[in-house]
Length: 274
Image 1 (cartoon, one colour):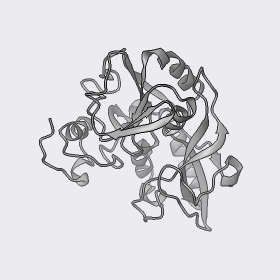
Image 2 (spheres, helix red, strand yellow):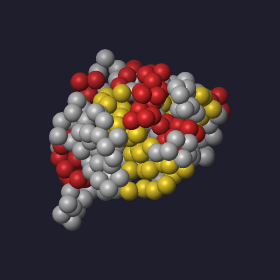
Image 3 (tube, helix red, strand yellow):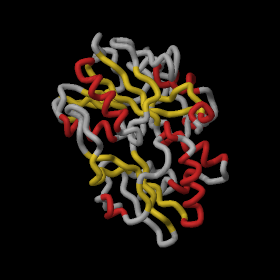
């Protein structure tokens, strides 16, 4: 049960992933997870009934850019034993979104009352893991996270006009994240991110946002973003895609992470580097 003792973001920056998960499980942290447990892989989450799990597995395999699989749990078991032994997908994320029949039904901070014996958890890599890799290469990741609220704003996320490869009932648009990258850094940012295919890999589009149906001033999922004259808009496949797919598919239930509230795994960047 939560112990009520809050903790600051700075205290969780350079700690093992398990300490971030424990702070969340104890109720001491309820915010987003960017810049936490640096060097460990952060992950997106989707939980589905077993009746839809095989089709969703096919969807992930056909769309590895937005859904790079790190782990799939056994039916009814909330422990992602490969990605984070001892972790619990019911308690170790700071916020979840519940979708039912194609509509957002609720946001909750705990799944213990919602978890069922037929649930299967899918843990998928996330581009927030790039931050430490970019920093190691001498690129300040805060420079690439400029929304309307300044350098600490969350990465802008958009629904594109690009369709995912369908699988069973799962079909719909690719969701992308935008980083306005200083022109002189664009090649380096591409090269660094391409080393980590299990964290979405390299960009899916570079250049004119309209070519993939994006208006940078109108972000559907987070804050919008302005692009400067000396910046290149670079787009990565985003782990919010399963949420868009849940809305499009209209399946009875899918539970996901809330945007920015990731699952922090025990895998390191070195574990997933190509």
